[in-house]
Every structure is written in structure tokens, then in C-alpha cells.
Image (cartoon, rainbow, N blue to C red; front, side, top):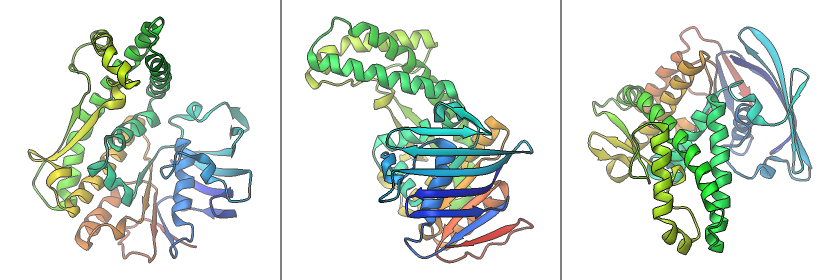
Length: 355
């Protein structure tokens, strides 16, 4: 798959803009605040329906406007297609090849992308929420059922939290049953993903950092058991919900479930966020994003778009060179920079987009 062109209207600082892309390496070059990251953000929004920079989609609408509009032409399986998204604070309109779709979830797997930015350091050393989001974003791109269970779990948890706050247990069990069913599915899918990411992330880390340490990924669950069938996990969650109700009523929130889990990222037997150097942390972040890209390719049979936002400024020259060597494995790539990097194309087409 590759993106051929993109039209933006009222998106971030863009009143109106049109870009054409090559199938290989697109270098988006310009001064700070020229709109480089906003262009990357727009491409990612097309593929995911959300922003990697903000949870408030109203922030994507240009100041003074009431909506934004994106229109893209892309090629998948050799067929050119058109995707249009119009978003306002009141509604979102999604049209693919003249057919309207009710929501972004209807387009799961249509276009895939991976974003690598300096903010990815937060996956390594930030709060658990960032690491959970790292897993959820990958799975939701490729698996509509995972996205469904995420939505279902969060809805049921909100209802349960309201009942805990009101100390009203009359109907809490029905919501706990819904939570437990979805929690078991989410946990199993996350564990499967980690098992597949593990060897790929180690290979990428060792190559980028030029080190022999293995990068290990281990799941830290708020629930005591993470093994067994989906039915056994569901029953275990239900037991934990019942056991912890008094404590949770006192805190007016749910304390057990996928929303409280974490991911431990280690080099050798030491957790990265507690001992690693800044360079090692950034190498880990790069390795995880490349492993994400590779996993999505294996699952979909398509090469996802790779969106690199200002990553050359966060890596030293040696690590940047090692990262550039991986570009030959990738499909279409978008790279933002203040100055065009010296990169050997090895026969790949390059296009410079000056802002």
C-alpha cells in the first residue's frame, strides 16, 4: 500500500494544502513550526481516526474554522482508492470510494501506519498508560474485535465506577460480567502480541544500538493470574472484582483489569527505565516501533506507512545511521527534518517536500 496524495483543509495551521507523494521515501523539510508534524499527524489520522499528539480532536481544527477536511488517494492491492474524512465538533463524515461509513472503526485495517517520534521515549520511561497505548494501538489497527472489546470494556467500567461511587451494588454484577469477558480477551491478545514482538524487538535493538543485550518484554497484570483459557480468565476477573469491591467502593474506581496493567521493558535482567542511558532508551523506542511495523506487515500482508517525526535530532549520528539502514526494509516512508539528511537510497525513489 502507498499514499499517492493528500488534500488538507482547515487542519491545524493548514488553511488549504495539497501534497503528492512518491511510493518510497518522502522527506518533509522545513523550519520549526512550518507544519511538518501536522502533515505527519494528518496522514496518521487517516489510518487510525485519532491523533498521536492530542486526545482533543477539536485541537486539529484550524483556529477560526468549524471543521477540517482530509481527502486522500491511496493504492492498495494495486487498486487506487479515495478516502475522505470531514470532522467537526458535531459529527464526523467518512466516505470511502463514494460509500459513507458510520465511524473510523468501520475502516480498521484499510490503511496502516506506524509513528515514531521523540515523544516515544515516554513508552520507555513514562507512565504505564503510554505502554498500554503502545499495545492497544497496534492491536486496534489490525483487529476489529480488539477495538470492539476495548470500547465494551471501557463502557462497562464507567458504569461500574458510577455504581461504586454511589455504593449501589444492585446491578453491579451484570457490568462486572461484561468487563470480565472483555478483559479476558484483551489480556490474551496483548500477551500474544508481546510474544511475537519479543524476538523482533531484540534484533532491531541489537542492530541499532550495536549491543548484544536482549530486549525483553514482560506483562505486569493487576490480576493475579494471566494464564488459562478465556473462560478461566473471565472467572478469575469476576472473583477479583467481588473480592475487592469494598476497597474499590472506598476509592470509587475499578482497580483491577487491563486498564491498570503495565509492560516491563528490560535489557538483560535490568528494567530500562531505571538504569539505561538516554541513548539506550531511544534505541529501545526505535526498536519497538520497527518491531511494531514488522508485526503489522506480517499480520496484514501489506507494508504499513512509516511516519518518522524529527527522530534524527533525538538519536546520535551512529544510531541515526543504523536506523537509516533499516529503511530498505520498509515500504513508503515519511520523514520530517529541518535539513535533508544524507541518506543512501539504494535504488529507492526519494522526494523532497519543502514547507
